[in-house]
Image 1 (spheres, rainbow, N blue to C red):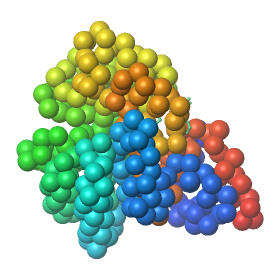
Image 2 (tube, rainbow, N blue to C red):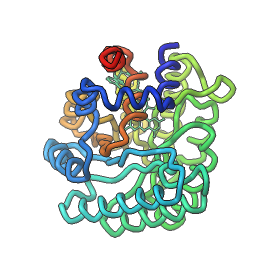
Image 3 (cartoon, rainbow, N blue to C red):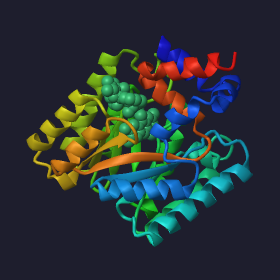
Length: 306
Ligand SMILES: Cc1cc2nc3c(=O)[nH]c(=O)nc-3n(C[C@H](O)[C@H](O)[C@H](O)COP(=O)(O)OP(=O)(O)OC[C@H]3O[C@@H](n4cnc5c(N)ncnc54)[C@H](O)[C@@H]3O)c2cc1C
């Protein structure tokens, strides 16, 4: 219930204006986001890599509504990849991309072309791209674009969300040689017709999907902070005889940092999802929906503005 209210607020421009300008927002944003500029992301990446972690960088922004914005997003990624390469932070750092930020909603062909240019630059820079998963209305289009990108750039990664009823079947399709698949629970508000609603059902689906990916021929990327699912991931790695370099764990910047280091010290690859940019509102609201304990922040933001 609370999760639904927060996720609805994530789409409200009125709440967005209040939260973005509230003084209390700064400190919480700093915890989850590298900063506003690519230089901030580069600096955080250096620190994370020095600590033995891998990174995937996300330039914040989604639901782009015009071609100029889509082009600006593409150009930002191209500059970021040049900078990562120049700083010798590839291949430890890759990038995560939302097709909606490249215009998917109004022009799928344009989004594909921009994504293709970003994948080409990533390949030149010695790294790769993962396409984030957004709400379920975009899943078919995203997987279709992924298939086309993978024809030219086979390491392009997919993201599948265990709350979607279709995902176990998608895992079977994608658990093939050379295929990188990030498995997460899913962060959007979805109807019962397409998505499991209870935590238990989402978690059970995660385990089924994890089994498919870990027993398949691809490269699973287990994106979760859930201690039970991390333990199941470790167990399946032993069961299916996967070496630490044949799968990875992924977690969000600012969430369970001690656990990220603990797993890295055990010899696992742990990749930190590191967002930067000014459009942090929707991303932050999804983080709050996952952890209502952080909600005091939102309440203070709203009440401090009267
Ligand atoms: C690397 C990565 C990439 C992702 N990419 C996508 C994507 O492309 N599309 C998408 O829909 N979703 C994405 N997600 C989000 C994901 O779908 C979940 O919403 C999110 O990871 C929370 O689920 P969980 O598996 O951590 O389990 P939960 O059951 O939500 O959390 C388990 C435990 O982790 C800790 N925790 C979890 N979230 C937080 C938080 N925000 N603040 C503090 N502690 C927390 C708490 O201790 C909690 O008890 C991504 C997540 C990660 C880690």
